[in-house]
Length: 246
Image (cartoon, rainbow, N blue to C red; front, side):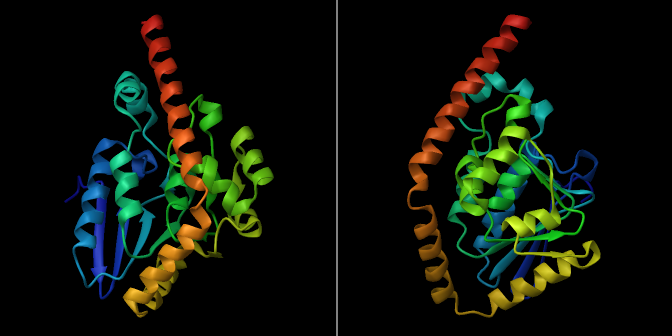
């Protein structure tokens, strides 16, 4: 259907999931987040699917959360918690590898979405940035904890405190992405890697993946909790400021 915000195609053991709001740089509004949750739930229940490629249609992987929607929902966010918590929970509970095939922009929440995946492959024109601070928002999807672990704390601070854009080659040099490929080969290369993953023993692969994540993220839980608490406080202030100006 033309109005679907998420498109899913399964071929053999590999599912390809595309964010489908190219006109909005795949900004993740509520409908897209809900459809992505539903897509992951459906794939998790399909035993034939052994690996997932996640990418975006058009010029962007994702520009992050839909800021216009977020502004209007500030009071709701402040009262009810982190936007997209169900999506975060669904990705965390997904028991098969997810490869982010980053085409074009991966900005702010889009960067966080890529960091939630197991592997990141970037097109030559990919651009990564964390603009939370420039927008006056405290992140809640893990970038303050995952980005430093991926590229080192000093590079992560440079990205997050300045909002600077990092191109694909620098992202590769810094260890943010596994490899860089031509844009027209991005999906095919990600699918080829996913096919290799799909051929592995699922039980052993799942255990290895869990152990790697456990070792990498063992100290991360308190940091993530503190990040979400700080994010909620910031949204509460944001909501009050909006009410005062209206």
